[in-house]
Length: 210
Image: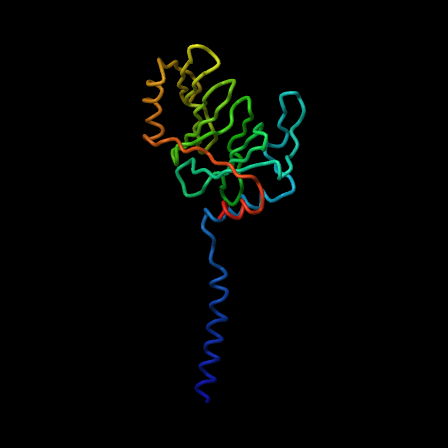
């Protein structure tokens, strides 16, 4: 009987010691990011554009009701943490955010005029914004921000193709073939991954941000 009591006490002590260890397991960087995105999107309103953003008509942007936004997850740069793309449901405003050093960081903002993101080349840093005014804009995500590296100007006939160096200097390209060949060095031959957006509601956040 005494041995049985000792075993019960030993078991209880073992469980008591193990519980803090189990509950204290740290989330992976990816899960931390997804949890942070979930909290950020769960507010009554979402700051799709940065504070102080001036709309085209001179009116300052104000946060958008959460129900009027949509979101997508994309692996744009070469790490395990996904980026969050958030748009207004009417497709007018957009921002791309990532998670660094325990914080959500806005890395790019655009609108219907400058182009909204339609796809990306997974883990290469390259994503594509499409604008009916400026055509296709191939953007490169780096550690210090986002720069435009290629563009297809569709507002003129025939279309015009450009390559942009890191200093922003543009070089005309002959045709789509030349653009594609030069783009291959940035995208490593990967196919474009289309961005899939989901309405910002509790069910979608639970299913996608996990």
